[in-house]
Amino acid sequence: MSDATPSMVADRYRLDELIGSGPMGEVWRAYDTRADWVVAVKILGAGEAGAAGEAAREALKQHAQAVARVIHPNVAMVLDVGDQEGAPFLVTEFLTGTSVGEDLAAEGPMPIVEVCDLVGQAAAGLDAAHRAGVFHGQIDSGSFRRAASGVLKVVGFGLPDEEPSQAERRYLAPERASGRPATAAADLYALGAVCYELLCGRPPAAPDLPVTGMRATPPSPPSASGAEAPGAPAPGTEAPGGVGQGVVPPSAIRPEIPAELDRLVLAMLAPDPARRPSGGEPVRRALAAIARPGAAPGAAPGAAPAAANPAGAPAGRPGDTEVYDFNGVPRAGDTAVYESAELDPAPPRTGNKLLIQMGIAVAVIAVVAVAMVMWAGSREETPVAEPSASTPPTPVLTPDVAPPARPTSEPPRASPTDLTPGDTATSLVQTVGPKATLGSGQTPAGGWDHWLVKFDEAVTAQEDIGDIDPHVAEKVHDKLRKAAKKLQDGHFEPARGQIAGVYRDLRNAQVKGDVPLSGPLASFLDDFAVS
Image (cartoon, rainbow, N blue to C red; front, side, top):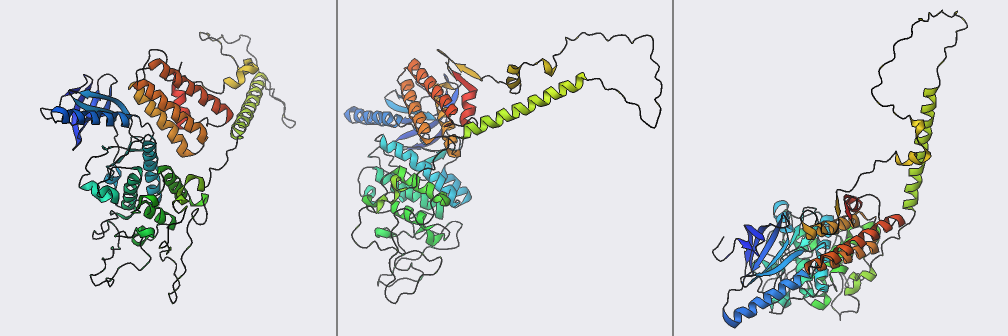
Protein backbone atom coordinates (compact mmCIF):
# COMPACT_ATOMS: atom_id res chain seq x y z
CA MET A 1 0.00 0.00 0.00
CA SER A 2 1.47 3.35 -1.01
CA ASP A 3 1.94 6.20 1.45
CA ALA A 4 -0.77 8.21 -0.34
CA THR A 5 -3.36 5.46 0.08
CA PRO A 6 -5.08 5.32 3.48
CA SER A 7 -5.56 2.01 5.28
CA MET A 8 -9.13 3.01 6.20
CA VAL A 9 -11.63 4.87 4.05
CA ALA A 10 -14.39 6.94 5.69
CA ASP A 11 -13.52 5.28 9.04
CA ARG A 12 -15.46 2.25 7.81
CA TYR A 13 -13.80 0.42 4.91
CA ARG A 14 -10.53 -1.37 5.67
CA LEU A 15 -8.41 -1.76 2.52
CA ASP A 16 -7.04 -5.32 2.44
CA GLU A 17 -5.72 -6.02 -1.08
CA LEU A 18 -5.06 -4.00 -4.24
CA ILE A 19 -6.86 -5.81 -7.06
CA GLY A 20 -6.58 -3.25 -9.88
CA SER A 21 -5.20 0.15 -10.85
CA GLY A 22 -5.33 2.50 -13.81
CA PRO A 23 -5.47 6.13 -14.90
CA MET A 24 -8.65 6.72 -12.85
CA GLY A 25 -7.27 5.34 -9.58
CA GLU A 26 -7.10 2.09 -7.63
CA VAL A 27 -9.54 -0.72 -6.84
CA TRP A 28 -9.22 -2.51 -3.49
CA ARG A 29 -10.77 -5.55 -1.90
CA ALA A 30 -11.95 -4.11 1.39
CA TYR A 31 -13.86 -5.06 4.52
CA ASP A 32 -16.90 -3.10 5.66
CA THR A 33 -16.44 -2.94 9.44
CA ARG A 34 -20.05 -1.86 10.03
CA ALA A 35 -21.95 -4.24 7.76
CA ASP A 36 -19.45 -7.11 8.32
CA TRP A 37 -18.90 -8.17 4.71
CA VAL A 38 -16.39 -7.85 1.86
CA VAL A 39 -16.77 -4.99 -0.63
CA ALA A 40 -14.80 -3.40 -3.46
CA VAL A 41 -13.56 0.17 -2.95
CA LYS A 42 -12.55 2.25 -5.97
CA ILE A 43 -10.51 5.32 -5.01
CA LEU A 44 -10.52 7.84 -7.85
CA GLY A 45 -7.28 9.75 -8.27
CA ALA A 46 -7.23 13.54 -8.57
CA GLY A 47 -3.78 14.66 -7.54
CA GLU A 48 -3.57 18.02 -9.32
CA ALA A 49 -3.35 21.14 -7.20
CA GLY A 50 -5.22 24.41 -7.52
CA ALA A 51 -8.24 25.07 -9.70
CA ALA A 52 -7.43 22.21 -12.11
CA GLY A 53 -7.31 19.73 -9.26
CA GLU A 54 -10.59 21.01 -7.82
CA ALA A 55 -12.28 20.71 -11.21
CA ALA A 56 -10.96 17.15 -11.62
CA ARG A 57 -12.20 16.15 -8.16
CA GLU A 58 -15.63 17.61 -8.89
CA ALA A 59 -15.80 15.70 -12.21
CA LEU A 60 -14.84 12.47 -10.45
CA LYS A 61 -17.44 13.08 -7.76
CA GLN A 62 -20.18 13.65 -10.34
CA HIS A 63 -19.07 10.49 -12.15
CA ALA A 64 -19.32 8.45 -8.94
CA GLN A 65 -22.80 9.81 -8.21
CA ALA A 66 -23.95 9.09 -11.77
CA VAL A 67 -22.77 5.47 -11.63
CA ALA A 68 -24.52 5.07 -8.27
CA ARG A 69 -27.86 5.83 -9.96
CA VAL A 70 -27.56 2.71 -12.14
CA ILE A 71 -29.32 -0.07 -10.23
CA HIS A 72 -29.80 -3.25 -12.24
CA PRO A 73 -29.13 -6.99 -11.65
CA ASN A 74 -26.52 -6.96 -14.44
CA VAL A 75 -24.59 -3.93 -13.13
CA ALA A 76 -22.27 -4.07 -10.12
CA MET A 77 -24.27 -2.28 -7.43
CA VAL A 78 -22.80 0.88 -5.89
CA LEU A 79 -23.26 0.75 -2.11
CA ASP A 80 -21.65 4.01 -1.04
CA VAL A 81 -20.14 7.20 -2.49
CA GLY A 82 -17.96 9.65 -0.62
CA ASP A 83 -14.79 11.70 -0.44
CA GLN A 84 -11.55 10.65 1.26
CA GLU A 85 -9.12 13.53 1.78
CA GLY A 86 -10.12 15.14 -1.50
CA ALA A 87 -10.25 11.89 -3.51
CA PRO A 88 -13.75 10.63 -4.40
CA PHE A 89 -14.42 6.93 -3.83
CA LEU A 90 -17.08 4.35 -4.71
CA VAL A 91 -17.97 1.25 -2.75
CA THR A 92 -19.49 -1.57 -4.80
CA GLU A 93 -20.43 -5.18 -4.22
CA PHE A 94 -17.41 -7.49 -4.40
CA LEU A 95 -17.70 -9.98 -7.27
CA THR A 96 -15.96 -13.29 -6.62
CA GLY A 97 -16.45 -14.79 -10.09
CA THR A 98 -14.27 -14.58 -13.17
CA SER A 99 -14.51 -12.15 -16.08
CA VAL A 100 -15.40 -13.34 -19.57
CA GLY A 101 -11.87 -12.41 -20.63
CA GLU A 102 -10.40 -14.73 -18.00
CA ASP A 103 -12.76 -17.53 -19.09
CA LEU A 104 -11.73 -17.01 -22.72
CA ALA A 105 -8.02 -17.13 -21.86
CA ALA A 106 -8.50 -20.34 -19.86
CA GLU A 107 -10.90 -22.26 -22.11
CA GLY A 108 -10.86 -20.66 -25.57
CA PRO A 109 -13.96 -19.83 -27.65
CA MET A 110 -17.22 -20.52 -25.83
CA PRO A 111 -20.31 -22.47 -26.91
CA ILE A 112 -22.67 -20.36 -29.00
CA VAL A 113 -25.61 -20.61 -26.57
CA GLU A 114 -23.39 -19.57 -23.65
CA VAL A 115 -22.11 -16.56 -25.61
CA CYS A 116 -25.69 -15.51 -26.38
CA ASP A 117 -26.58 -15.75 -22.69
CA LEU A 118 -23.53 -13.84 -21.41
CA VAL A 119 -23.63 -11.08 -24.03
CA GLY A 120 -27.40 -10.79 -23.52
CA GLN A 121 -26.85 -10.14 -19.81
CA ALA A 122 -24.15 -7.59 -20.60
CA ALA A 123 -26.46 -5.85 -23.09
CA ALA A 124 -29.20 -5.64 -20.44
CA GLY A 125 -26.80 -4.02 -17.96
CA LEU A 126 -25.51 -1.52 -20.52
CA ASP A 127 -29.08 -0.68 -21.54
CA ALA A 128 -29.92 0.20 -17.91
CA ALA A 129 -26.84 2.42 -17.69
CA HIS A 130 -27.64 4.17 -20.98
CA ARG A 131 -31.20 4.87 -19.83
CA ALA A 132 -29.71 6.50 -16.72
CA GLY A 133 -27.48 8.68 -18.91
CA VAL A 134 -24.26 6.79 -18.07
CA PHE A 135 -21.93 5.49 -20.79
CA HIS A 136 -19.17 3.00 -20.11
CA GLY A 137 -16.55 4.10 -22.63
CA GLN A 138 -13.88 1.60 -21.44
CA ILE A 139 -15.36 -1.76 -22.45
CA ASP A 140 -13.10 -4.76 -22.93
CA SER A 141 -13.40 -8.46 -22.10
CA GLY A 142 -12.63 -7.68 -18.44
CA SER A 143 -15.61 -5.31 -18.11
CA PHE A 144 -18.07 -8.17 -17.53
CA ARG A 145 -17.61 -10.27 -14.39
CA ARG A 146 -19.69 -12.98 -12.73
CA ALA A 147 -21.11 -12.74 -9.22
CA ALA A 148 -21.08 -15.75 -6.89
CA SER A 149 -24.61 -16.59 -8.10
CA GLY A 150 -23.38 -16.80 -11.71
CA VAL A 151 -25.11 -13.58 -12.83
CA LEU A 152 -22.94 -11.48 -15.16
CA LYS A 153 -22.45 -7.83 -14.17
CA VAL A 154 -20.98 -4.77 -15.88
CA VAL A 155 -18.03 -3.23 -14.01
CA GLY A 156 -15.46 -0.48 -14.50
CA PHE A 157 -17.41 2.50 -15.90
CA GLY A 158 -15.00 5.15 -17.18
CA LEU A 159 -15.14 8.93 -17.36
CA PRO A 160 -16.67 10.39 -20.56
CA ASP A 161 -13.38 11.92 -21.72
CA GLU A 162 -11.05 9.28 -20.30
CA GLU A 163 -8.35 8.04 -22.66
CA PRO A 164 -8.74 4.29 -23.38
CA SER A 165 -5.91 1.94 -22.49
CA GLN A 166 -3.92 0.03 -25.10
CA ALA A 167 -5.87 -3.17 -24.41
CA GLU A 168 -9.20 -1.36 -24.76
CA ARG A 169 -8.30 0.04 -28.20
CA ARG A 170 -9.05 -3.36 -29.76
CA TYR A 171 -12.70 -2.79 -28.85
CA LEU A 172 -12.84 0.91 -29.69
CA ALA A 173 -15.52 2.19 -32.06
CA PRO A 174 -14.22 4.23 -35.06
CA GLU A 175 -15.81 7.44 -33.79
CA ARG A 176 -14.17 6.97 -30.39
CA ALA A 177 -10.79 6.43 -32.06
CA SER A 178 -11.22 9.78 -33.79
CA GLY A 179 -11.61 11.52 -30.43
CA ARG A 180 -15.37 11.66 -29.90
CA PRO A 181 -16.78 11.06 -26.39
CA ALA A 182 -18.38 7.82 -25.25
CA THR A 183 -21.92 7.10 -26.42
CA ALA A 184 -24.42 4.25 -26.25
CA ALA A 185 -23.64 3.33 -29.86
CA ALA A 186 -19.90 3.17 -29.08
CA ASP A 187 -20.60 0.88 -26.12
CA LEU A 188 -22.62 -1.44 -28.37
CA TYR A 189 -19.72 -1.54 -30.86
CA ALA A 190 -17.36 -2.58 -28.05
CA LEU A 191 -19.87 -5.19 -26.85
CA GLY A 192 -20.04 -6.55 -30.41
CA ALA A 193 -16.25 -6.82 -30.42
CA VAL A 194 -16.35 -8.77 -27.13
CA CYS A 195 -19.05 -11.06 -28.57
CA TYR A 196 -16.93 -11.64 -31.68
CA GLU A 197 -13.93 -12.54 -29.51
CA LEU A 198 -15.91 -14.98 -27.35
CA LEU A 199 -17.16 -16.72 -30.49
CA CYS A 200 -13.96 -16.73 -32.54
CA GLY A 201 -11.15 -16.56 -29.99
CA ARG A 202 -9.76 -13.28 -31.35
CA PRO A 203 -10.89 -9.65 -31.60
CA PRO A 204 -12.52 -8.59 -34.88
CA ALA A 205 -10.00 -5.92 -35.88
CA ALA A 206 -6.93 -8.15 -35.78
CA PRO A 207 -6.73 -10.03 -39.10
CA ASP A 208 -3.09 -11.01 -38.56
CA LEU A 209 -3.69 -12.84 -35.29
CA PRO A 210 -4.06 -16.63 -35.20
CA VAL A 211 -7.43 -17.91 -34.06
CA THR A 212 -7.34 -19.56 -30.65
CA GLY A 213 -8.53 -23.14 -30.79
CA MET A 214 -9.64 -22.90 -34.46
CA ARG A 215 -8.27 -24.65 -37.53
CA ALA A 216 -9.10 -21.79 -39.88
CA THR A 217 -6.76 -18.82 -40.30
CA PRO A 218 -8.04 -15.36 -41.23
CA PRO A 219 -7.32 -14.43 -44.86
CA SER A 220 -4.53 -12.10 -45.83
CA PRO A 221 -5.34 -8.52 -46.89
CA PRO A 222 -5.43 -7.62 -50.58
CA SER A 223 -2.10 -6.95 -52.25
CA ALA A 224 -0.96 -3.47 -53.26
CA SER A 225 -1.76 -4.18 -56.89
CA GLY A 226 -5.41 -4.64 -56.03
CA ALA A 227 -5.48 -8.38 -56.75
CA GLU A 228 -6.79 -10.55 -53.97
CA ALA A 229 -4.21 -12.44 -52.03
CA PRO A 230 -4.54 -16.21 -51.78
CA GLY A 231 -7.06 -17.15 -49.13
CA ALA A 232 -8.80 -13.78 -49.16
CA PRO A 233 -12.56 -13.88 -48.57
CA ALA A 234 -14.72 -14.01 -51.64
CA PRO A 235 -16.53 -10.80 -52.65
CA GLY A 236 -19.65 -10.36 -50.59
CA THR A 237 -18.43 -12.24 -47.51
CA GLU A 238 -17.48 -9.03 -45.76
CA ALA A 239 -19.89 -7.55 -43.30
CA PRO A 240 -22.87 -5.71 -44.77
CA GLY A 241 -22.83 -1.95 -44.97
CA GLY A 242 -19.07 -1.66 -45.21
CA VAL A 243 -18.33 -3.45 -41.94
CA GLY A 244 -15.91 -5.72 -43.75
CA GLN A 245 -13.08 -3.20 -43.44
CA GLY A 246 -10.67 -5.68 -41.83
CA VAL A 247 -13.47 -7.71 -40.14
CA VAL A 248 -13.99 -11.31 -41.18
CA PRO A 249 -17.57 -12.54 -40.57
CA PRO A 250 -17.67 -14.86 -37.52
CA SER A 251 -19.15 -17.70 -39.58
CA ALA A 252 -16.12 -17.62 -41.90
CA ILE A 253 -14.01 -18.61 -38.89
CA ARG A 254 -16.57 -20.79 -37.12
CA PRO A 255 -19.01 -22.25 -39.65
CA GLU A 256 -21.56 -23.46 -37.09
CA ILE A 257 -22.43 -19.88 -36.13
CA PRO A 258 -26.01 -19.26 -37.33
CA ALA A 259 -26.70 -16.59 -39.94
CA GLU A 260 -28.85 -14.55 -37.52
CA LEU A 261 -25.98 -14.28 -35.03
CA ASP A 262 -23.58 -13.46 -37.86
CA ARG A 263 -25.78 -10.54 -38.96
CA LEU A 264 -26.28 -9.27 -35.41
CA VAL A 265 -22.55 -9.20 -34.56
CA LEU A 266 -21.69 -7.48 -37.84
CA ALA A 267 -24.47 -4.93 -37.31
CA MET A 268 -23.03 -4.11 -33.87
CA LEU A 269 -19.62 -3.64 -35.52
CA ALA A 270 -20.92 -1.28 -38.22
CA PRO A 271 -18.57 1.72 -38.69
CA ASP A 272 -21.58 4.04 -38.95
CA PRO A 273 -23.20 4.39 -35.48
CA ALA A 274 -26.61 4.91 -37.14
CA ARG A 275 -26.47 1.40 -38.61
CA ARG A 276 -25.94 -0.31 -35.25
CA PRO A 277 -28.81 -1.68 -33.14
CA SER A 278 -30.78 1.05 -31.41
CA GLY A 279 -30.03 -0.11 -27.86
CA GLY A 280 -28.98 -2.88 -25.53
CA GLU A 281 -32.49 -4.27 -25.01
CA PRO A 282 -33.03 -5.08 -28.74
CA VAL A 283 -29.65 -6.85 -28.71
CA ARG A 284 -30.67 -8.88 -25.66
CA ARG A 285 -33.99 -9.85 -27.25
CA ALA A 286 -32.30 -10.86 -30.50
CA LEU A 287 -29.73 -13.00 -28.67
CA ALA A 288 -32.49 -14.69 -26.66
CA ALA A 289 -34.31 -15.55 -29.90
CA ILE A 290 -31.09 -16.94 -31.43
CA ALA A 291 -30.38 -19.05 -28.35
CA ARG A 292 -33.97 -20.44 -28.54
CA PRO A 293 -34.34 -21.21 -32.24
CA GLY A 294 -37.58 -23.13 -31.64
CA ALA A 295 -39.24 -19.95 -30.40
CA ALA A 296 -38.48 -18.08 -33.62
CA PRO A 297 -38.49 -20.50 -36.57
CA GLY A 298 -37.32 -19.41 -39.97
CA ALA A 299 -35.39 -16.29 -40.77
CA ALA A 300 -34.80 -13.54 -38.25
CA PRO A 301 -37.55 -10.92 -38.17
CA GLY A 302 -36.93 -8.26 -40.79
CA ALA A 303 -33.94 -10.05 -42.29
CA ALA A 304 -32.93 -8.75 -45.69
CA PRO A 305 -33.40 -11.11 -48.62
CA ALA A 306 -30.34 -12.66 -50.19
CA ALA A 307 -29.00 -10.86 -53.21
CA ALA A 308 -29.39 -12.54 -56.56
CA ASN A 309 -26.32 -14.20 -57.97
CA PRO A 310 -24.47 -12.12 -60.56
CA ALA A 311 -24.69 -13.31 -64.11
CA GLY A 312 -22.60 -16.37 -64.58
CA ALA A 313 -21.91 -16.81 -60.85
CA PRO A 314 -22.28 -20.35 -59.55
CA ALA A 315 -25.17 -21.17 -57.29
CA GLY A 316 -24.45 -21.21 -53.56
CA ARG A 317 -23.66 -24.47 -51.86
CA PRO A 318 -24.89 -25.63 -48.43
CA GLY A 319 -22.76 -24.00 -45.76
CA ASP A 320 -21.64 -21.06 -47.94
CA THR A 321 -21.80 -17.63 -46.36
CA GLU A 322 -24.99 -15.83 -47.31
CA VAL A 323 -24.48 -12.69 -49.43
CA TYR A 324 -26.63 -9.59 -48.84
CA ASP A 325 -26.77 -6.54 -51.03
CA PHE A 326 -26.18 -3.48 -48.84
CA ASN A 327 -24.40 -1.41 -51.45
CA GLY A 328 -27.39 0.81 -52.12
CA VAL A 329 -28.81 3.56 -49.97
CA PRO A 330 -29.58 2.30 -46.43
CA ARG A 331 -33.24 1.47 -46.12
CA ALA A 332 -35.45 2.59 -43.31
CA GLY A 333 -35.80 -0.20 -40.80
CA ASP A 334 -32.52 -2.00 -41.59
CA THR A 335 -31.48 -1.69 -37.97
CA ALA A 336 -35.02 -2.21 -36.70
CA VAL A 337 -34.56 -5.91 -37.32
CA TYR A 338 -33.37 -5.98 -33.73
CA GLU A 339 -36.08 -3.77 -32.26
CA SER A 340 -37.94 -5.41 -29.41
CA ALA A 341 -41.29 -4.85 -31.11
CA GLU A 342 -40.19 -6.99 -34.04
CA LEU A 343 -39.29 -9.98 -31.92
CA ASP A 344 -41.71 -12.71 -31.01
CA PRO A 345 -43.61 -11.84 -27.83
CA ALA A 346 -43.30 -14.02 -24.80
CA PRO A 347 -45.73 -16.97 -24.83
CA PRO A 348 -48.98 -16.21 -23.01
CA ARG A 349 -49.13 -17.38 -19.44
CA THR A 350 -51.81 -19.66 -18.14
CA GLY A 351 -53.46 -18.99 -14.82
CA ASN A 352 -54.36 -22.64 -14.22
CA LYS A 353 -51.05 -23.72 -12.69
CA LEU A 354 -52.08 -22.78 -9.14
CA LEU A 355 -55.48 -24.50 -9.50
CA ILE A 356 -53.79 -27.68 -10.71
CA GLN A 357 -51.35 -27.61 -7.79
CA MET A 358 -54.19 -27.06 -5.30
CA GLY A 359 -56.20 -29.89 -6.85
CA ILE A 360 -53.30 -32.31 -6.56
CA ALA A 361 -52.71 -31.27 -2.94
CA VAL A 362 -56.38 -31.79 -2.01
CA ALA A 363 -56.37 -35.22 -3.66
CA VAL A 364 -53.26 -36.29 -1.79
CA ILE A 365 -54.71 -35.06 1.51
CA ALA A 366 -57.94 -36.96 0.91
CA VAL A 367 -56.12 -40.22 0.07
CA VAL A 368 -53.87 -39.96 3.14
CA ALA A 369 -56.84 -39.14 5.41
CA VAL A 370 -58.81 -42.18 4.19
CA ALA A 371 -55.76 -44.40 4.63
CA MET A 372 -55.28 -43.16 8.21
CA VAL A 373 -58.94 -43.81 9.10
CA MET A 374 -58.81 -47.33 7.65
CA TRP A 375 -55.58 -48.05 9.48
CA ALA A 376 -57.06 -46.85 12.77
CA GLY A 377 -60.17 -48.98 12.26
CA SER A 378 -58.12 -52.08 11.58
CA ARG A 379 -56.32 -51.63 14.92
CA GLU A 380 -59.58 -51.45 16.90
CA GLU A 381 -60.92 -54.79 15.57
CA THR A 382 -59.81 -57.87 17.55
CA PRO A 383 -58.87 -60.71 15.22
CA VAL A 384 -60.85 -63.94 15.86
CA ALA A 385 -59.40 -67.28 14.81
CA GLU A 386 -61.96 -69.43 13.00
CA PRO A 387 -61.57 -73.22 13.34
CA SER A 388 -60.59 -75.11 10.23
CA ALA A 389 -63.18 -77.49 8.76
CA SER A 390 -60.71 -80.36 8.52
CA THR A 391 -58.87 -79.96 11.81
CA PRO A 392 -60.64 -79.87 15.18
CA PRO A 393 -59.87 -76.87 17.29
CA THR A 394 -57.12 -77.29 19.80
CA PRO A 395 -58.20 -76.35 23.35
CA VAL A 396 -56.37 -73.38 24.75
CA LEU A 397 -55.72 -73.16 28.49
CA THR A 398 -56.31 -69.72 29.91
CA PRO A 399 -54.25 -68.89 33.02
CA ASP A 400 -56.23 -67.86 36.08
CA VAL A 401 -53.83 -65.04 36.87
CA ALA A 402 -53.68 -62.15 34.47
CA PRO A 403 -50.20 -60.84 33.59
CA PRO A 404 -49.15 -57.76 35.50
CA ALA A 405 -49.82 -54.49 33.77
CA ARG A 406 -46.79 -52.62 32.42
CA PRO A 407 -46.01 -49.29 34.09
CA THR A 408 -47.21 -46.41 31.97
CA SER A 409 -44.75 -43.64 32.59
CA GLU A 410 -45.26 -42.11 29.14
CA PRO A 411 -48.40 -40.07 28.49
CA PRO A 412 -50.91 -41.77 26.21
CA ARG A 413 -50.48 -40.89 22.56
CA ALA A 414 -53.45 -39.86 20.51
CA SER A 415 -54.42 -42.29 17.82
CA PRO A 416 -55.01 -41.15 14.27
CA THR A 417 -58.74 -41.38 14.87
CA ASP A 418 -58.45 -38.62 17.48
CA LEU A 419 -57.66 -36.07 14.74
CA THR A 420 -60.41 -33.65 13.94
CA PRO A 421 -61.26 -32.84 10.32
CA GLY A 422 -59.55 -29.48 10.71
CA ASP A 423 -56.35 -31.18 11.88
CA THR A 424 -56.09 -33.46 8.89
CA ALA A 425 -54.76 -30.95 6.32
CA THR A 426 -52.31 -29.14 8.60
CA SER A 427 -50.85 -32.29 10.11
CA LEU A 428 -49.52 -33.33 6.69
CA VAL A 429 -47.34 -30.22 6.19
CA GLN A 430 -44.56 -29.12 8.51
CA THR A 431 -44.60 -25.36 8.90
CA VAL A 432 -41.13 -23.80 9.04
CA GLY A 433 -40.78 -20.24 10.24
CA PRO A 434 -38.60 -17.63 8.53
CA LYS A 435 -34.90 -17.46 9.32
CA ALA A 436 -35.17 -13.80 10.27
CA THR A 437 -37.87 -11.19 10.81
CA LEU A 438 -36.82 -7.72 9.69
CA GLY A 439 -38.79 -5.15 11.65
CA SER A 440 -38.24 -1.54 12.59
CA GLY A 441 -34.65 -0.90 13.66
CA GLN A 442 -33.46 -4.35 12.55
CA THR A 443 -30.78 -4.84 9.89
CA PRO A 444 -30.18 -8.09 7.96
CA ALA A 445 -26.77 -9.76 8.04
CA GLY A 446 -24.45 -7.91 5.69
CA GLY A 447 -26.61 -4.79 5.70
CA TRP A 448 -29.69 -3.72 3.75
CA ASP A 449 -27.70 -3.00 0.57
CA HIS A 450 -26.32 -6.54 0.45
CA TRP A 451 -29.74 -7.99 1.27
CA LEU A 452 -31.40 -6.01 -1.55
CA VAL A 453 -28.80 -7.28 -4.02
CA LYS A 454 -29.62 -10.88 -3.02
CA PHE A 455 -33.37 -10.15 -3.27
CA ASP A 456 -32.92 -8.72 -6.77
CA GLU A 457 -30.78 -11.71 -7.82
CA ALA A 458 -33.48 -14.10 -6.60
CA VAL A 459 -36.01 -12.37 -8.87
CA THR A 460 -33.55 -12.57 -11.78
CA ALA A 461 -32.94 -16.27 -11.15
CA GLN A 462 -36.70 -16.88 -11.21
CA GLU A 463 -36.90 -14.99 -14.52
CA ASP A 464 -34.22 -17.26 -15.96
CA ILE A 465 -36.40 -20.27 -15.11
CA GLY A 466 -39.26 -18.58 -16.96
CA ASP A 467 -42.24 -19.22 -14.64
CA ILE A 468 -42.75 -15.70 -13.26
CA ASP A 469 -44.93 -13.09 -14.93
CA PRO A 470 -42.51 -10.64 -16.68
CA HIS A 471 -44.59 -7.60 -15.71
CA VAL A 472 -44.53 -8.61 -12.04
CA ALA A 473 -40.76 -9.15 -12.18
CA GLU A 474 -40.15 -5.76 -13.79
CA LYS A 475 -42.27 -3.99 -11.14
CA VAL A 476 -40.33 -5.76 -8.38
CA HIS A 477 -36.98 -4.73 -9.91
CA ASP A 478 -38.18 -1.12 -10.14
CA LYS A 479 -39.43 -1.00 -6.54
CA LEU A 480 -36.20 -2.55 -5.25
CA ARG A 481 -34.20 0.10 -7.12
CA LYS A 482 -36.29 2.82 -5.47
CA ALA A 483 -35.84 1.20 -2.06
CA ALA A 484 -32.07 1.07 -2.61
CA LYS A 485 -32.07 4.77 -3.53
CA LYS A 486 -33.95 5.61 -0.32
CA LEU A 487 -31.39 3.63 1.67
CA GLN A 488 -28.55 5.54 -0.01
CA ASP A 489 -30.28 8.80 0.96
CA GLY A 490 -30.59 7.64 4.59
CA HIS A 491 -34.39 7.13 4.58
CA PHE A 492 -34.38 3.72 6.25
CA GLU A 493 -37.99 3.47 7.44
CA PRO A 494 -39.56 4.49 4.08
CA ALA A 495 -37.24 2.00 2.35
CA ARG A 496 -38.23 -0.78 4.74
CA GLY A 497 -41.89 0.08 4.21
CA GLN A 498 -41.46 -0.15 0.43
CA ILE A 499 -39.74 -3.54 0.79
CA ALA A 500 -42.63 -4.77 2.94
CA GLY A 501 -44.99 -3.64 0.17
CA VAL A 502 -42.97 -5.67 -2.36
CA TYR A 503 -43.37 -8.71 -0.10
CA ARG A 504 -47.16 -8.24 0.01
CA ASP A 505 -47.34 -7.82 -3.78
CA LEU A 506 -45.36 -11.01 -4.36
CA ARG A 507 -47.49 -13.02 -1.92
CA ASN A 508 -50.65 -11.80 -3.68
CA ALA A 509 -49.07 -12.69 -7.03
CA GLN A 510 -48.42 -16.20 -5.74
CA VAL A 511 -52.12 -16.57 -4.94
CA LYS A 512 -53.01 -15.42 -8.46
CA GLY A 513 -50.50 -17.80 -10.04
CA ASP A 514 -48.25 -15.06 -11.45
CA VAL A 515 -45.36 -16.03 -9.14
CA PRO A 516 -44.47 -19.71 -8.48
CA LEU A 517 -44.76 -21.27 -5.04
CA SER A 518 -41.33 -22.86 -5.37
CA GLY A 519 -37.97 -21.79 -6.71
CA PRO A 520 -35.26 -19.28 -5.74
CA LEU A 521 -37.67 -16.36 -5.23
CA ALA A 522 -40.12 -18.37 -3.12
CA SER A 523 -37.22 -19.66 -0.99
CA PHE A 524 -35.99 -16.11 -0.42
CA LEU A 525 -39.49 -14.93 0.60
CA ASP A 526 -39.81 -17.86 3.01
CA ASP A 527 -36.40 -17.20 4.58
CA PHE A 528 -37.23 -13.62 5.62
CA ALA A 529 -40.26 -11.84 7.02
CA VAL A 530 -40.50 -8.04 6.72
CA SER A 531 -42.84 -6.27 9.11
